[in-house]
Amino acid sequence: MRLEKCWFCSSTVYPGHGIQYVRNDAKIFRFCRSKCHKNFKMKRNPRKVKWTKAYRRLHGKDMTQDSTFEFERKRNRPERYDRNVTENTLKAIKKIDKVRVDREARHHAKRMKGKKAQLLREATKELEQSIHMVKAPAALQQDPSLTLPKIKVKVTQEQTEGNGMVE
Amino acid sequence: MAASNSSKLFRAGRSILGGFSNSYFGASRWTSPLNHMEFLSQQQRAFIQMRTNLKVVDNSGAKRVMCIQASKGRKGARLGDTIVASVKEAKVGGKVKKGDVHYAVVVRAAMQRGRCDGSEVKFDDNAVVLINKQGEPIGTRVFGPVPHELRKKKHLKILSLAEHIA
Image (cartoon, rainbow over all chains, first blue to last red):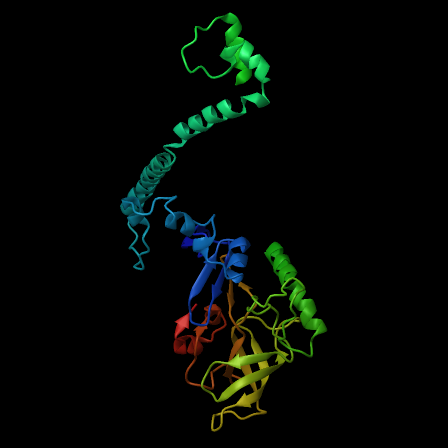
């Protein structure tokens, strides 16, 4: 039994799933499901199709080089069965998966790092520009604490509920 | 098994109906109304039945062959089955001549065939290797990939001659 990779989306094809297409030049294409197969028949390039691993790796969305990938290299030599080796391998698989998932999460976090600051900047800009959609300008002039404080304003009881409406 | 059969039949149902209604057109494809662009260059999957044209991939001398009878199967032959075929086009000075009737074994079929692990295989075209009544190939070379369904059907000589076993 061998777990193959789908040619289009690079997900694992478990036994009992998918279609194997053998071209006349003896190149074998394995697909995990008909979605990938139909995209292949449409002659779509997986490197341009956004949801495939090929696209994500190419555009730096997912990790490309890591030592944990070395363990999954295809080896064509069958291993002689040894009970201890098998047991250790199974334990190692679990550990390696955990490590790989952690590293991928870190890669994702690094990629998304500037997001919070950008969201904050966008929110302040929107507040300055579009506050007239929420509150009439006349009301703003009467009660200046409804706008974003440029200077520190002493927060009293009535002003805090005004700020709540602005949110 | 029944579920996969029914789904297979459903998938090939379009082409079976097409095959039956166009039974005198053999392996001609009828383009569905969606494909007004010609990108679907792959073959419609259908059984190999009477009047199906097949490519010959050995060096017996024949080039194209037309199926006369699928020995097993009500609907037609599939990958790995033997058929009776008549040679339609042959090379000059080969072992077989035009108009000969031979047995042949299907080594590549565009219709997917289920494997015992549940996956399915399909090839690019329909191809046969000519054999005699005992199952031995007439030619001495086989071109292109062959499936290992042939091992179960005891066509070991063809497997040994093949350049690639899918």
